[in-house]
Length: 190
Image (cartoon, rainbow, N blue to C red; front, side, top):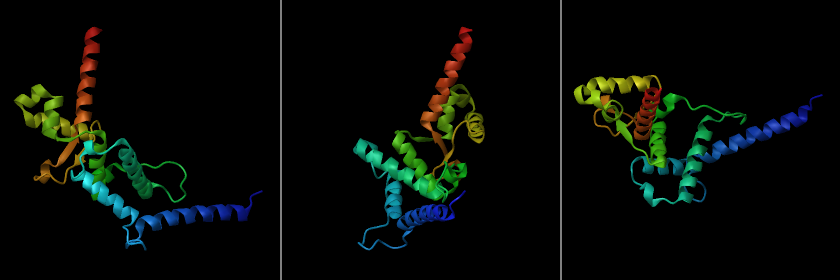
C-alpha cells in the first residue's frame, strides 16, 4: 500500500534541501570565494535601508522587486517549517521585540513610501479636535487602538525617549481617518 523506500527518499530529499538552504544562509564565515554569506548580505542591505542610507527614489522597480524577494526569502528562512508545506504566520511580537523585526518593519515602510509617526502625530490626524484641547487623551486613544490591533504599532529604536518610541504608519492612520469620514458621511445620508 505505502512504499517505504519512496517515502523515505522523498522525505530525505526534502530535509536535505532545507538543510542546504539553512547552510547557505547561515554560514558563519565568508564563503570560499571571500564573499559574504547571503544572510549577511541581506541583513546589511536591510539595515542600510532602515537606517535611511538608501533613498527610495534612487532605486528602480527591478531593484525593488529584488529587495522584496530578499525580504520574503528571509521571512521564509525564519518561519517556514522544515517540511516546507503550508503557510506560516509571523508572530506579531517579531516586528516589535526583535532587532531584525524592527529593521524589517522599517524596510516595509520604505517599500510602501510610508513613514512611521508618533502617537501624538497620529492623534492629530485621527482626533484633531481632541488633540488640540487634550493631546494626552488623544494619544491614549491611539495607544488603545494599537492595543486592540486597529493600528499596528512599531518600535523606533532611534527615538531618544524610550517611552515614546512607539510609532504607527502614517498611511494607516490616514486610511482610518478616511474610513471614519466615509462612514460618518454614509450615516448622515441615511
